[in-house]
Length: 117
Image 1: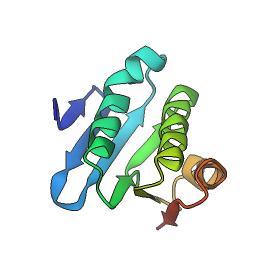
Image 2: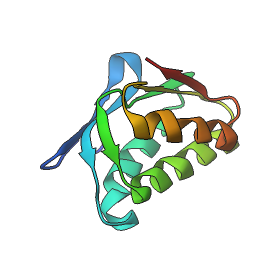
Image 3: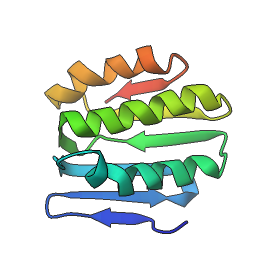
Image 4: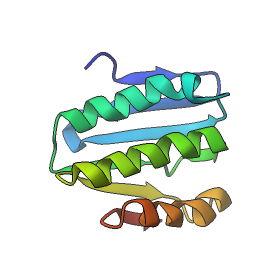
């Protein structure tokens, strides 16, 4: 893999190989798909390892703008098409955007395991 951590002023994205988990933390409000490309690349590189299960841990992601939701949506659709990896998303029931938006990922990827803690 090219990189296992991406850091910005207000956010951190890092890969935990032992649990095949990508953790996204902070406030992620990049301007468009080009700015989200390194994060999408990290997600795709983890998926290319073809693990049986891959987890996105968003519990500490306080904010995600529409460009970020779009990037995650495209990834969820790609995982649905791949159909060999069980995608799991762990979110926080305490963060309102997650409570409202993460349910929509079930429409994009019906076999997704969604947990709000």
